[in-house]
Length: 339
Image 1 (cartoon, rainbow, N blue to C red):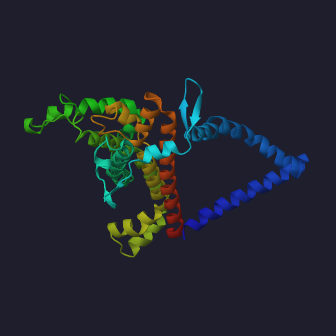
Image 2: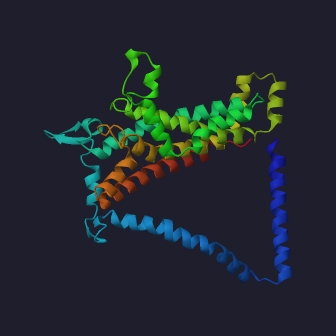
Image 3: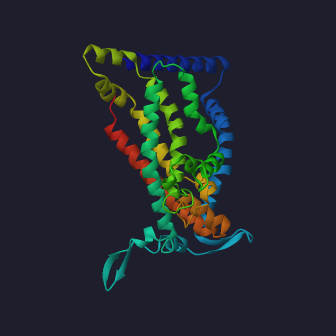
C-alpha cells in the first residue's frame, strides 16, 4: 500500500540516526555506562519537575482525601474512607420495607445528593456536546480541505473561538443569552426567554458555548488527518467507480481511525473536566442546574473548606475517566485495522 514507502522512509531515517550516534560515541570514546549516565542526566530535570509539580501534589491530595483536612492548621484528622462514603451516599438504591427501591431523586433533586446530581449534569453535558463537537469539526474540515475561495479566512473564522479564553467566552454568551440579551433581541416576542437564568435551559447555554468552541479545535485535528491520507487511495477508488459517499465510507473514515480515537477520547475527558465556562457563566446555578462535577469539587474544597471531601470527589472522577480511557484504548487495539 501507499503507506509502506512512508514507513520505509521513517525506518531508514531512524537507522541513519542510530548509526550516526553509534559512530559519534565511538569517535568520542564514550562507554555504554557513560552513555546511560548521560541519558539519565538529560531526563533528570524533567523527572524533578514532574515529581515536584505534578506527582507530589497528586499523592498529597490522595493522602488528604482520607482526612478532615484544615488548610489553616496545615493538618487533618484521619477518617479513613469516610469522605468517599459521604460523597457516594445516598446511593441510587435504598432499602424500604426490606426491598430495594430505585431513588431517581438523587439524580433529579440536588438536595438528595449533590455529587450524583452534578455527575448527571456532567453526563448530560458530555452527551450533548461531544457528538456535535466531533461531527461538526469533521464536517468543517471536509469542507475546508477542498480548494474553495477564502479557505484560509474560513479556517481562521472557525478557529477563532479556540483562541478566546473560556472566561471571555462565558461572559460573552451570558450576555447573549440573558433576558435582555442579544438572542432575545432577534427572536419574536413570544419566543423571548431568560435562557441563562432558567434552570431548564441554563445547562443548554453552557453546552452551546462548548460546541461553539469545540468545533474549531477538532477541525484542526481532522484537517491534519485528512492531509495525511495518500491521494493514490482516492485515485484508485475513482478508477473503481466509487461514489463520493463510498470514497468517504471506505477511504476517508478508516484512514482517520487514529484521529477519530484521539479526538473522541480528548473530547470526553474535556467534557468530564468542564469547569471554567460553567463557573463564569452561572456559578453552577440557577438551582445547581449547571453544577458540574469539577465545579462541585472546587466549591467543596475552596469555597466551603472541605478539602478532604473535595479530594475524594477528585479521585472518584479520576477513576471514572481512567476506566473510560482504558476501555477505549483496549477497544481501539482490538479493532484497529492496518491499511
